[in-house]
Image 1 (cartoon, one colour):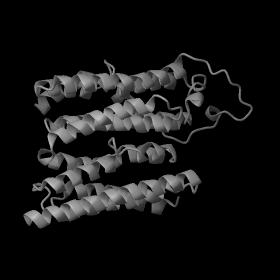
Image 2 (cartoon, rainbow, N blue to C red):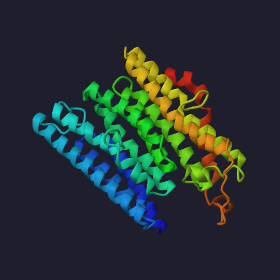
Image 3 (cartoon, one colour):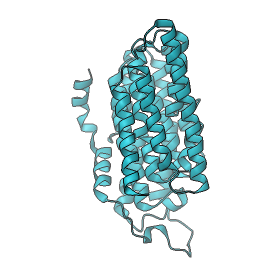
Image 4 (spheres, rainbow, N blue to C red):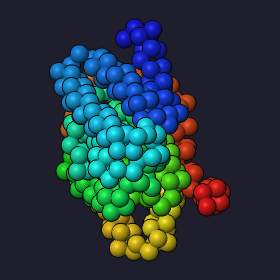
Length: 348
């Protein structure tokens, strides 16, 4: 892609998200979301592969549907209340419609079906942008309006997402689909606590972005998109293989890694809010997710691939990716748990 075009698209992505962050008016927030969608579409279709074009079409249609619902919900709310302010979402119908639209935007269950299919059709770097940056603007709106949304609806969305995210990833062999289901499960953790402690949602979103970036960059470095290929990376780079296993366990939320911190604090908050059954359900769904991360770790570090290929194996080709961002993200993914007391002090 032409560097000028790429720079324009990336700056438009930044502009769209910033516009939504800064807006207190519904139309401005909607405009930011639209700029975001239009800026990422050419990035998704840049390889001119049928799968990439199909993924772009699916993504565009779902995002356009969600944007239309947001516009309709905000117009309905303005019609009833006479205000376009984001904080004044008092009409129950508009509120429910708005929640459904944002759930569709970020891929929460039960409106998650586009997410694995779209991610599977993209290259890893565009998939990384879709899984991380594209979640920021909708979450800014969710956090601003969380107090007006029905708590039962948010709880249902959260529990369903963690369950579907864990269950859906069990049977996959494609790593991008596994990361898509992982994303759905993490979104569930964030959405369940947003009504009680929005700062924990931000913490969970931050750690999710760090861990997912480390996972995508590692797969890009080893040029891996399937579990079968993952089993052959140990001979090329043993150090990267061992850190990748730890990154996956951190995504699963095992102590003493960074991924344990948001799950621990969210379960603690749910217990404080006198919701022991919800907390127990969330902990059990985390176990389902952990199973497929362990499956990846097993395939990667404890098995030797039985197949011998006649073609050039992926690890023999030189990668152009810079190692420094990967090293920084892996370090953050593995070592931030000791900062928990500081973060607890800041969030309480």
